[in-house]
Image (cartoon, rainbow, N blue to C red; front, side):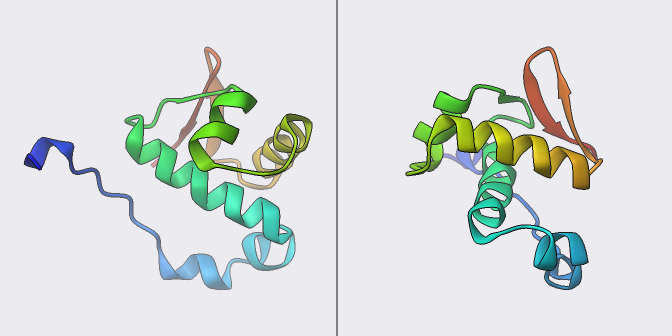
Length: 92
């Protein structure tokens, strides 16, 4: 494996004490949030905002409608996740 194939995503431990993550998200939304962070690393922080793509890449069992609703909810409580030109991305 070549070094240019390595992407790093930092998970801050403070996420475990972030009320939004621990108490405002259900388990499915937590998994989706963490999956979006991984996808951000895989896509250089330009995640196609397409529920079918996200479902396939993260191997999620829920419906695309659930994914759409969960993403909208996550966007409402985490303002550093944005949508631009049909891509999701995280602000630094």
